Image 1 (tube, rainbow, N blue to C red):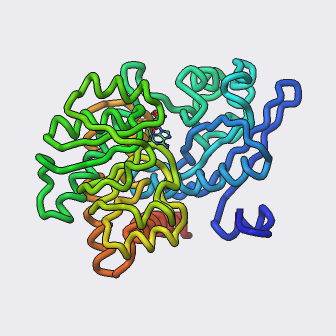
Image 2: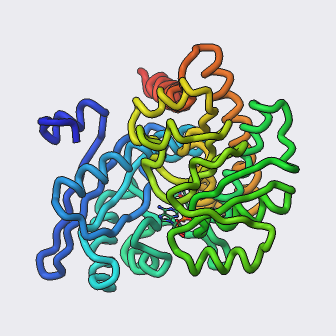
Length: 359
Ligand code: NAD
């Protein structure tokens, strides 16, 4: 939240359309749905369930995440706007069919303005419960995993970065550090190794790390607190947000940062600092949009088609090249160039809609 601002001042500053509070006393349901911008289509965004320490923390999170989804959808070229839902509850202890169905009824009341999906603290089963009350929820066919599409998008991003920095997208022999080998990171690691990269990994979960190294003995490991300091071609953050901050940026020894983690830059100042160091940064929401693209495909009238979704994810390569070209032409950091491309798309669609409805 902007310091000392009221909720309405924040909504006005960033042009939010709506912030909906949902409560069901008997179930203890406290949820918020933020709808940032629906110019491109209904506001899509996951349902995040966390035991937020305060109401303010939950409001800040839902607003920040919904706005991020607007930019992600715009940059990914899908017809989806930005939204998000947060539920103030502990996913380990407080999940129930009744709670998700109650949330589903609130989503239904919005009449399709907001489309729910999985996020931190929720899963496909929870979406099924929501889906008992509303059709405005997306999920992929059971045999598909969203992280597969996200990882595929990260690979497109890495290729585009290599092309930009080295004049060739060839992966053979390139050195890479991968921070976090969860659903997305482990897939990226597998693809990188297949293409001949030299990969160093880390994870705070030692068991996960050991399993991966057992499957791929060519991997080397390093302690979590050192991963960003290694001298490599590419650093690939696939764990947490805010990993590019005032402490870590001076310690980076890579040419490229390209990874899946959301909100990698601690703030805009860090984005500017990173650009000043000469490290090429692939804006996170642009390269990690593969999952959103897959979800958008699942709304196709003929249903989800894997090849069509993957084909659209490959376009991340071209979009990133456009962002890099714009950043060079305008002498601006890449994160600003990505925002500009996303804002241009929204503005042109808004203008076309206004013209279409003009008398
Ligand atoms: P995940 O929870 O499966 O994996 C994250 C991994 O990071 C875990 O193995 C965890 O132990 C590890 N980790 C946590 N803190 C760490 C630290 N300090 N150092 C090293 N490792 C650490 O999550 P995921 O689905 O693989 O997503 C990874 C990131 O990508 C998240 O930031 C997520 O928001 C973002 N993202 C994911 C998707 C998707 O499709 N899953 C889509 C877009 C963005």
